[in-house]
Length: 306
Image (cartoon, helix red, strand yellow):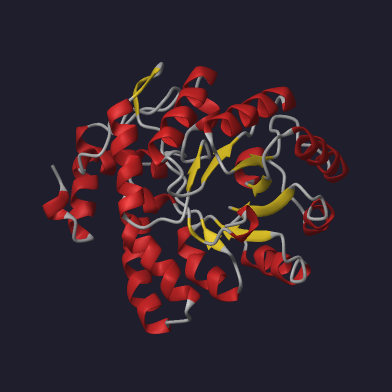
């Protein structure tokens, strides 16, 4: 399968940690197998859900090596290489290739917000330098800049830039990209927010990169498949389950990181991996953990809790 034909549910895998300097290696293995057993079409490492920007570089490299070895070519592995340094992004891309990854993914460099012309130059330089196909990552809430449609259009002509993941949750923007890029057969669009997955897939998105698929991969794979075949009745049923997850597990506490805390806590309760979160963030304490337990029970996972 050509990389630019990748379609389906591609979870942004969390990074299981024991502490700020060590991976939960057994958890990494269990989570990888959990995702594959759920039928996912690929795995995306070191994205927002993977805490990439909080991780030491040696952990990023170790995670890529461990997951790629575990996957052993069964499904594609995408590796996030977002950084404020182009050279560090390129170095991680070479590590990804060495380990057998399929492609790399990069959001805009953060801190000073680049202009749109600067983004075209930056991503062109990055695409020229990396040894794997490159997906763009639109994440304006975290990097302070939107990849405007005209910028995406310009970059879509680069032979090594093959798609974009959009996490803006802006349906007008996503619809604009679908329309603008409708004749770009070698450029694929993916949606991040799971609340919008079914709608975007039915409109023409190649797939979805949903954090909740870490927890219940089969549910999210089934949602993608139903949307891809325009099975509205099944989409409606599965969407209600997804919305329950979004409105419970992701919304506990008043934290910018509530979503990540909730996913990691839930995975811990399901016995898949540790729930440690890298600094400056902290995992849920006992009271919040009980709320996650109740949320899991509300979505029918009571028998899975350990």
